[in-house]
Image 1 (cartoon, rainbow, N blue to C red):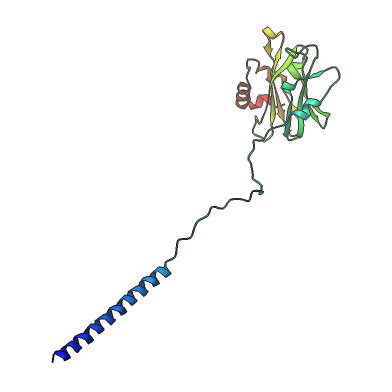
Image 2: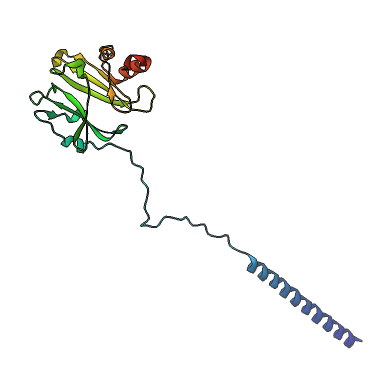
Length: 212
């Protein structure tokens, strides 16, 4: 009887041990399977343009006045301070050029101003300084659309007389799409102004005065 009991215990022990091994193996397989199915999140890389690819750089547009500075006129000297490259209708790719008496530089008396294109005089502004420029000079210039017709007009701040007691002789030239026109009587109304902004405001408030 004791022998049979021993045999029974031995068989039971072996069965338990075998089941334990099977369970362990099953658990081990499950863990391994889960580990294999896990996927790492993809690495995100920043894309950069190739070293030799062109890079667009925003640069402010500027007029190059250099070509305008090379213009010459007999017996007159170019005034670089009042000479500008312009590019608007009907004077595309041109120069607003101011010349003066070479004997007077401070101030540049006897000033005259023109539009040149490709080295050739294209336009001679009428009635400068009220019709007499012997003792006059250009003090400032502006190119603006004063009457909202999409054409740029010209404001010239003029001075006349001795430097210490100069008086204003301003001019407004309206662009009609073919040339610049002016009205000397209307220009006389701006003599109290010495700034571009003052003349601009006056013209916009009194547009009919400056129609030829």
